[in-house]
Image (cartoon, protein in one colour):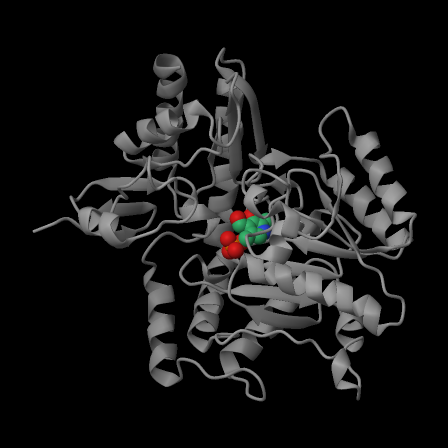
Length: 424
Ligand SMILES: Cc1ncc(COP(=O)(O)O)c(C=O)c1O
């Protein structure tokens, strides 16, 4: 009998995969805690939480139980003109936890759509309030998703090259590295001063896809305060940073100026199902309340607010808010700090950075890029050792499920040491 991998290679087209160089995928048949198990019985620690989505470990029985319950009660219904308990309860529970003063929840299906909705809301907000503004500002290196609006507000890179002419024009301010915070702030101020900025969108504290690039809360505070001063909306894209990744439940909590819109996905369901949320203030919502139907928001997806998925979100939230989960996140952060100190001075390490449960190690590499030659070698090195760690070019990182144990973390750290000691 053919393996699942072999059958896959005849029918499948995988995301973010050079299909010529990587025709075979590892077939996963089971997930338990921090591990994924392949069709040959090999176990892998999921060091990157399956593209940053998994919070509580794979196959969590509590989430499974709540999902099964909801599936048997009412799996899904259209969400225009209809509503249901799990969607309302989730909104009621989530809104007070979000940064700023969020009052309304708009559901969609993934991080890109959460961002897409945020962009549409921002642009239409200004149109509806009679002062049309059309410019969006983002941070150089940003990644906000793969739909056209989300691509437009993301870095012009190899990811978007094929569509460059079709993306709308966005102003990118320099990434605030250690020596150019002022330059970046000045660039933001300059574009805000034109009076045409509808919204500023940011990945708060950590730019994920750009290579886990981190910046201080004080910088974000300055950006957000400037946006307030110049009357531009603030979109806080917490798709990756949300649900405890950065030390607080949401990265935006670490600053005082609240955003106008918050985007969520990934950890929202604990990583069990796809779901996106765009949360807004009352003022944004109110700008769409009108007898004139051209002012309503024309957006929605077939599976908006899927009831089963909402049940998964609620179950994940229950787990996230336990003391055990808080303690796990603290343990991960403390372990990362210790390991960061240990490896920082290594001759093959260019930089080590950490925010909360995210640890990134930049390896020295003359050809650094997303398709760095080092990347495939490093990926295979970890895979052979039963670790799923998908480097971003020459940057390796650990962004684990909160179920990970100290022993499992140590296994990851030792593997990283083995890589830099023996393979580079
Ligand atoms: C900050 C951020 N926004 C949006 C997205 C897009 O999310 P999705 O892949 O669910 O469309 C991502 C995905 O990595 C992300 O990191």
